[in-house]
Length: 74
Image (cartoon, one colour):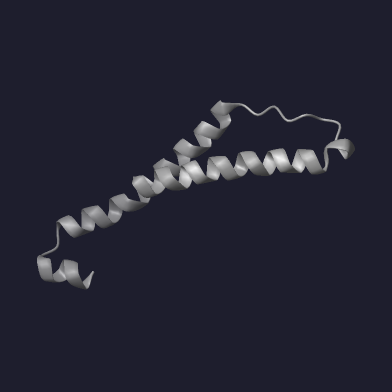
Protein backbone atom coordinates (compact mmCIF):
# COMPACT_ATOMS: atom_id res chain seq x y z
CA UNK A 1 0.00 0.00 0.00
CA UNK A 2 2.84 2.39 0.79
CA UNK A 3 4.34 1.76 -2.65
CA UNK A 4 1.01 2.61 -4.27
CA UNK A 5 0.60 5.74 -2.18
CA UNK A 6 4.12 6.93 -2.97
CA UNK A 7 3.66 6.25 -6.68
CA UNK A 8 0.28 7.98 -6.69
CA UNK A 9 1.64 11.07 -4.95
CA UNK A 10 4.56 11.32 -7.36
CA UNK A 11 2.36 10.76 -10.40
CA UNK A 12 -0.15 13.40 -9.29
CA UNK A 13 2.64 15.95 -8.88
CA UNK A 14 4.35 15.06 -12.17
CA UNK A 15 1.08 15.08 -14.13
CA UNK A 16 0.12 18.48 -12.75
CA UNK A 17 3.54 19.93 -13.57
CA UNK A 18 3.48 18.44 -17.10
CA UNK A 19 0.09 19.97 -17.85
CA UNK A 20 1.17 23.34 -16.51
CA UNK A 21 4.44 23.21 -18.51
CA UNK A 22 2.70 22.27 -21.74
CA UNK A 23 0.30 25.18 -21.48
CA UNK A 24 3.07 27.61 -20.56
CA UNK A 25 5.19 26.58 -23.55
CA UNK A 26 2.40 26.12 -26.08
CA UNK A 27 -0.01 28.60 -24.48
CA UNK A 28 -0.03 31.19 -27.27
CA UNK A 29 -0.75 28.50 -29.89
CA UNK A 30 -3.54 26.78 -27.94
CA UNK A 31 -6.75 28.71 -27.46
CA UNK A 32 -8.22 26.53 -24.72
CA UNK A 33 -7.36 26.79 -21.04
CA UNK A 34 -7.18 23.52 -19.09
CA UNK A 35 -9.68 23.02 -16.32
CA UNK A 36 -7.61 21.24 -13.70
CA UNK A 37 -9.73 19.89 -10.89
CA UNK A 38 -8.24 18.31 -7.81
CA UNK A 39 -10.86 15.57 -7.98
CA UNK A 40 -9.45 14.24 -11.27
CA UNK A 41 -5.94 14.02 -9.85
CA UNK A 42 -7.13 12.41 -6.62
CA UNK A 43 -9.19 9.83 -8.51
CA UNK A 44 -6.14 8.95 -10.62
CA UNK A 45 -4.07 8.63 -7.45
CA UNK A 46 -6.67 6.43 -5.78
CA UNK A 47 -6.81 4.17 -8.81
CA UNK A 48 -3.02 3.81 -8.68
CA UNK A 49 -3.22 2.76 -5.05
CA UNK A 50 -6.01 0.25 -5.79
CA UNK A 51 -4.11 -1.26 -8.72
CA UNK A 52 -1.01 -1.71 -6.55
CA UNK A 53 -3.05 -3.29 -3.76
CA UNK A 54 -4.85 -5.63 -6.13
CA UNK A 55 -1.51 -6.76 -7.57
CA UNK A 56 -0.27 -7.69 -4.11
CA UNK A 57 -3.27 -9.81 -3.14
CA UNK A 58 -2.32 -12.92 -5.15
CA UNK A 59 1.20 -13.30 -3.66
CA UNK A 60 -0.27 -12.86 -0.16
CA UNK A 61 -2.87 -15.57 -0.77
CA UNK A 62 -0.27 -17.95 -2.25
CA UNK A 63 2.22 -17.41 0.55
CA UNK A 64 -0.42 -18.12 3.20
CA UNK A 65 -0.83 -21.69 1.99
CA UNK A 66 2.89 -22.42 1.70
CA UNK A 67 5.24 -23.89 4.22
CA UNK A 68 8.35 -21.96 5.29
CA UNK A 69 10.71 -23.70 2.86
CA UNK A 70 8.32 -23.15 -0.05
CA UNK A 71 8.01 -19.46 0.90
CA UNK A 72 11.78 -19.05 0.75
CA UNK A 73 11.84 -20.67 -2.72
CA UNK A 74 8.90 -18.55 -3.87
